Image (cartoon, rainbow, N blue to C red; front, side, top):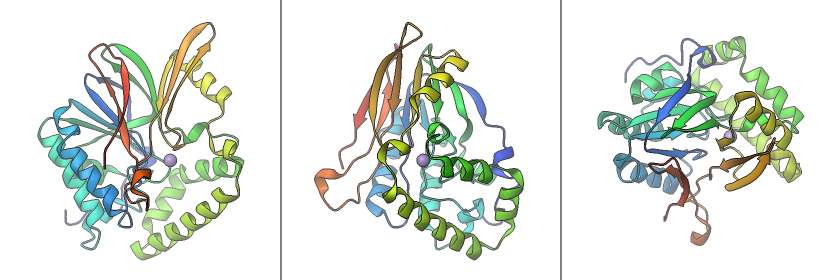
Length: 275
Ligand code: MN
């Protein structure tokens, strides 16, 4: 992958698919892959060879990577994570599995170079899906955590074309240093914040469902895997929250990760992966 640009155009200008037809998908998010989490990376690579390889589609709803500072990461000989993940996705695409990637808040700089290298297609956030005829709204989920006012401000700033252009124009070392500092700040902030602030705001989710005419939502980001069933304007509605992955955690029984799959009738099912 010699000569991959950090990203041009800035990733926020890439047109993601606003609508996708899924037949036999696995949906995952929040793997937060990084060199510091080798067991999680190994489990993902095995997941690509085993669970995902037999499917028609793999949809990654954001935060595949713990961070992404530009597509030139694929050129960095010292970054085995990016190279291994790209190769695993490429192998899936080559065997006919359609791979869809949505930006998360950690990896919103995944750009055209990454898509070319992997054969993945970018999904807009949010995107509409037809899962065997069952309509759903897919999203990363961070856009609905509106109680965290500071994060929402940060989010709109890093999704500006100018901000992305300026960041990506910097040397790789400077981008890495900036990302390290931002992650440290974010970890410190999270510890001090009330739990409910870091979850989605129910009324905002309801508004998004209403606006899109959907009654089924699948998202990640909050690391609170669950199936919420409720009534919206007199109709049954569901919100499926995808699990985050962590196979590097000290206590083996606390290792976690998994996916949501759909059957031929569009019925969803959450599956936990064994380590
Ligand atoms: Mn996230």
